[in-house]
Figure 1 (spheres, rainbow, N blue to C red):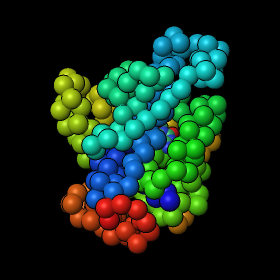
Figure 2: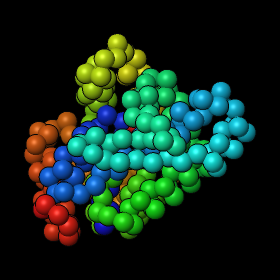
Figure 3: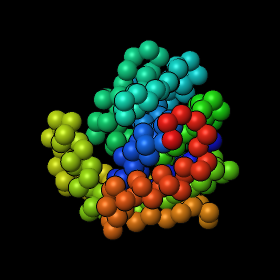
Figure 4: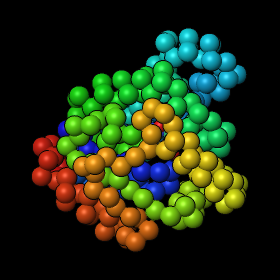
Length: 221
Ligand code: DC
């Protein structure tokens, strides 16, 4: 079973999806984190596409959701913190727009969700990756609200990034993610839209959880 939440950067998808996963006892999958891990591989190849595509064939990206934290590994090295740096954020939309990369990440996700019940968040999950998802949500929020949320998140991790840098990064990514040729950010026709500027977090988690609960077979629900 797979439920998806799509939306632009900072719309609150990942914190909502994690809270819903924890409440219902299902798995969480952060598709953006996988794109970020691939972007790290690209950066470490010195932005050389030939080397990068070669490496993509031999590396193993894996992930585990434990205690409300999404861990990501390249081979056996944990990169969960490194993938959140601005260095990666600045390159990730460019890398995600490469068809070889989306094919790689989509395969990884499709293999994973065969074995358990998942809620996943991303940009194109409801439209392209899981068009038959059991339920789809699309989250939106104003740019300023989203940038402030990201700022708080990054500051709590010790970053000294400014609101201006985040505003610029998010608006550039919005533009790239929604105008790319392949599978741009778009609400699926059958997705439920949620404007998170006007929802209290707990209400939003409750609303989504109750919609999904009848579909969940396993564990603590
Ligand atoms: O959710 P995030 O900000 O960590 O995502 C990072 C980038 O990855 C985002 O700007 C575009 C890309 N992405 C994508 O193309 N498709 C997805 N399903 C998830 C993320």
